[in-house]
Length: 476
Image 1 (cartoon, helix red, strand yellow):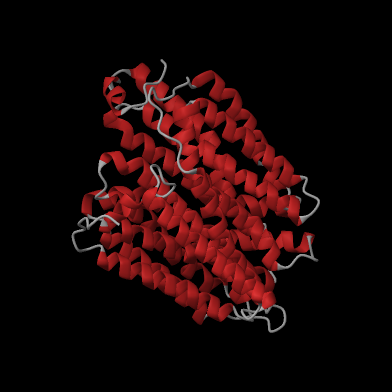
Image 2: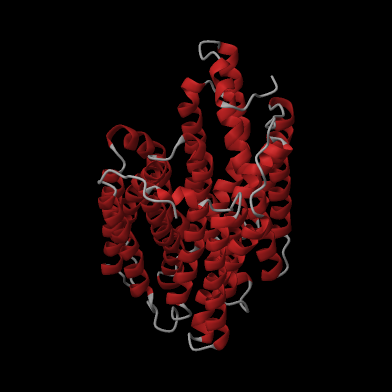
């Protein structure tokens, strides 16, 4: 089988043929080994962040936040390129390249002698993920008959969500047994096993008429623009907003993004296709995705800081107390997309956002230097249920009106938006919290949780707006 990776080829696969389905599930398992790495890397880093601070006491929170943000920002700016390269180079070759880059970067991170090397290694991990994730998704779609693709992709997504859900508890166990470096060594065996089985199970495929490579300069501009804004945010606490360096970086970042928007309207194959934003549902879904990602990923950092710096819990204990957010998010994200298809996504976006907002408000109202696990667990469980309902439903909102030829690019933009929100969420949390914890114990944690609750409230408003039937508007 040479892998005819088109919709027409998918129709030639007989779902009643046991050999076809057996091979499809084999492909799914092998690809999931690769996606396991990247999914867990997204959540595990928040739990080990406190141990990073202890290992590098001379580095401030602003500098160490780039260990998280370099992965998100580089990944956001290269994801669309990675998807197209898979069609040009071959999906298996691109998947293998992504795993090699990600695994090698994990070794580099585990051996990092200083924060600078660690930040660089995380950026390389972002490139590896951008190569392997789109190629892996295309391979899974290609392996399943058309009538079973929803099952295949849904299962693949659920396995990735389960890996992300395991991140906090696994990271906590690794730090408890050793230190943060083991969170990166963990990727090595998964990468090696995936490389062996991909070579045995997955055949090569590339499009006969590969798509044109997206605007490389646009990718660099996206990286520079988002990176400039994040840099201004995280350094504003140390340098103040009156600093000419902060203001110059902020203006430069905004300027580059404005130029990128203008360039994208004229470029034959832009990194972010402005035609997608003609669709009201896509615009609303991306707005919700950006805002909710800021709140969700901001909470991971704020939660770890609160539990380890104020409650004086170990990283292991903090990881256990954060696990419910990812567990419920992983389980319900896989289900909420299906529910959204059946009953409409807006009600799940709204309900999930309200639950998230109430959970964040609950944590804000019960902030205390005294440990009160009985108050923490209901709030974090409610937040996890809420986020699980929101994620899958937001993806459903974004693609609800897109024509079939825009689905691939729309999905890539959605992932890009989520990663940008990840970076902004961490940056805003670092900016608000600053170094105040330890000086006044709770410090600025109160305003941090208010910010997180506000993100949920704005996403709930987006859910209400989605109830109106989305219609395209004039091209941008």
